[in-house]
Image (cartoon, helix red, strand yellow):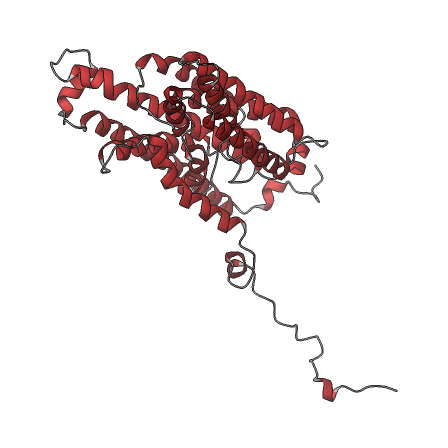
Amino acid sequence: MSPLLPDASSAIHPTSRATLTRLRRARKRQRRLTLWGLLAVVLAVFSLVLMQGQRFIPPLTVLQVLLGENVPGASFIITELRLPRALVAIVAGCCFGLGGAAFQAMLRNPLASPDIIGISAGASTAAVFAIVMLSLSGTLVSLLAIAASLGVALLIYTLSWRKGVAGARLILVGIGLGAMLQSITAYLLTQAPSWSLQEALRWMTGSLNSITLSQLPPLAVALGLLGSLLLMMSRHLDVMRMGDDMASGLGVRLSLTRFIIILSAVGLVACATAVVGPVAFVAFVSGPIAARLFRRRGSMLIPAALIGALLMLVADFIGQFLLPARYPVGVVTGVLGAPVLLLLLMREHQGPGPSGRRQRRGRQPTPPSSSSPPHRPSSQRVVSS
């Protein structure tokens, strides 16, 4: 290299380079601590769910049951009632949070969630059709809901394609298709006989009632496979947050990457919906809460998964024991998630006016330069003839 053209790295002062290195290490350390703290909170709530109920079981007794000992009166309550419910809540919450955060990061929009753009509505329509019209139940309803979710996602992707998929177009198409599917679901419910109407409504609400341990392995396998695929694509998601042009310039194949992310995220949400029903707002609020907690530094996939698991555990515990009557988990998440939706909508539509946050944080107007001529009032201006 010519001595007149020094290396770019040598242009940075050693003190500045050391400061940047310390800042990066501090941010990584803070992220790890926050992540471990969030995991500790999830484990603490999981332990509380196993201990507390209509009957309190001491922690030592819970540990003995988990280690395989047969404790009269406690083994049945923990292994058959509380443990399957808590484990399915954690795994389903991870699926919802991971899928929702992947959609929001890919489309760079906090409103881009599977339960907002019609994918959960497709699963609900298929499940209600199977229960009401075909008199199906159990695994067949779940498989039909998964297939319908994937089919609706493929239809939304196809209708949004115009030499590529734009985020705003995909959201609008998904909202319109979701409204149509909700109308079909409402019509199917009006035609339902009394013996299948209750089952259809219970499925649509989203509930952890009647959960068994046999439903956990398929959901855990789906989380392991599809979640690993999304984590492998996390670098592409981070690049896509900077814009399509920047991502294409850095070598990201946008169409293929979006298709893989949509397929994986929809698969996660569909599998969770097939087991616990379309639990409202968990996929929607997990990503924004994780972004606020981690200050939008790094990938939000794992934090959103932990937030989703925590929301499912807390909402189910509130609905079961902290309210005057027992409510399904979907009712509690719907009540808690609606204010978050309104808050995000207000922030999306808040303009950069004088009272906006962008204007307050923006650059102050520069004063006029001393070399420029002073401003004269109109009455003192000289008009040449």
